[in-house]
Each structure stands twice: as C-alpha cells, then as structure tokens.
Length: 157
Image (cartoon, rainbow, N blue to C red; front, side, top):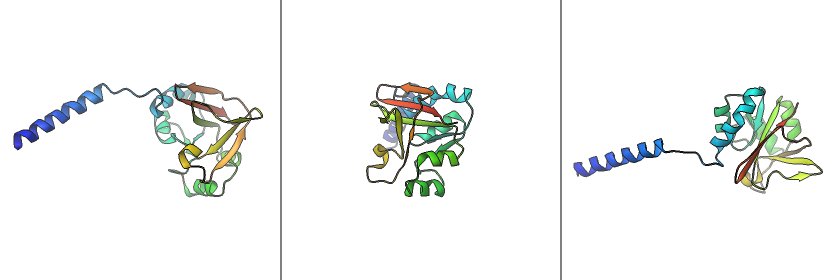
C-alpha cells in the first residue's frame, strides 16, 4: 500500500512537471489575446474598459481596466446592467479612454457603419439577461484576429 502510494505520487509529480514545462497557450486564449494587446496598451496609457475576459487581461496589462459585465464590478455597475443603461453614458461617467471588445470569428455586429456593443455579451449572459448597449461609430484603433476570435480596441476620447 505504501509503495503504491509512493509510485502514484511520483508519477503524478512527473506528469505535473512535464505538463508545466510543455504548456503552451491556445491561439484563441485570453492569455494570448492579452499579450497581443499589451504593446498597444503600453504605448497608449489611459483607462480601459472591457467585459468578458477582463480579469486576466487586466492582470497581464497592469493598467486600470473597468470590468463591464458585472461579475467583479461594484454595485453601481451591476445597477447599470440591471437598468439596461446606455453603454456610452456608462463609459463616459467612468472616464474610459479605450474600450476593448472581443467577439467570435464572425466579428462584432454592425449597423450603418457603427459597431453594436453590448455588455455583458449575449453569448455569455444569455438572450434574456439585462444588458447595457450602445454603438461606436469609429473604426477600432487596434485589432487582433485569431482563428476563432477577434479583439478590438476603440478610442473613446
């Protein structure tokens, strides 16, 4: 019994070490996107806002990121979502300089040359959840395209 426990622990240890040394992030991962965004953010200091994927992204970027989907935001952001506030107003009230948005491979929805933005995203929160939404009628200042995801940075001021 003791010997089998020792073998199991030793084997587990070597598997963990092997997987740690050989680890590589997937091309569509939050980790990879954050590192691709990092040079832009370092060259353009300011207050950023982001919904889905903001936690790890903010940690890697080491810059202020306002979390828009409500999971780790304050009660005021939760109230903004619950009341379906206009996203443009919320971004202005929070003095946001840049908005980071992510999407699937089809990209963000557009209408009349404007990008439709909603937080939290329907894909994350579902169709029946309350959301803030608005339009951004400028092209992104930075864009990342991966095999299955896209990321955009919009300059707001």
